Amino acid sequence: MTNSAGVALGIEAARRLVELDVVDIQPGLTDAEFVTIERRFGFEFADDHRAFLAVGLPVSHGQDDHPDKASWGWPNWRRLDNPTLQEQVGWPLATALDDIQDGEWPPGWGRRPHDLVRRTAKAERLLAQVPRMIPVYAHRYLPAGRGSAGHPVLSVHRLTDTIVYGHDLAHYIDQEFREPQVTVAFWRDYV
Image (tube, rainbow, N blue to C red; front, side, top):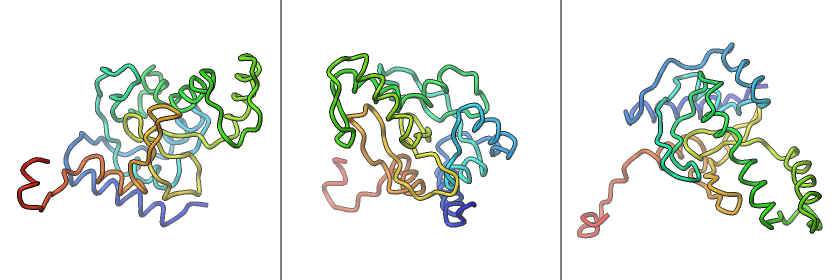
């Protein structure tokens, strides 16, 4: 069942992005394109994310100038065979597994196996149970899940470097792309 408040949130986020005029926006994804994407990657978009992409598909090429892929840009969901898109989709799980192999162990997972092979196998099994994170822009992600909406947009730079970039998709668009209007005399000249 689709969450109507989530659809409204996605449409509002798209409206804000269009208003800012900071990215090229192609026609939105069709129902058939959503089906193809979701089958290909094995997830369902959350209702706000789906509505956002149905209004218009933001596209850019990004610049792959950072070793941890901080500059991927907007995912182009019409280029499913693009290795960059595949890497961007897989990033949250890949970086989680990398950090776990380096010794990180999530608090709720019980005892950490000392043997790397066992630790990796247990981590892969447990990671298969966590919500998939779907790229919004660069390394900013929303959780997958039809019927859900309004989740915070997370910046997943590393498992151990994950922060909130917006309390929902519309707020995120403002935080990431809108220049703040500093109104404090004197200090606004230094921001």
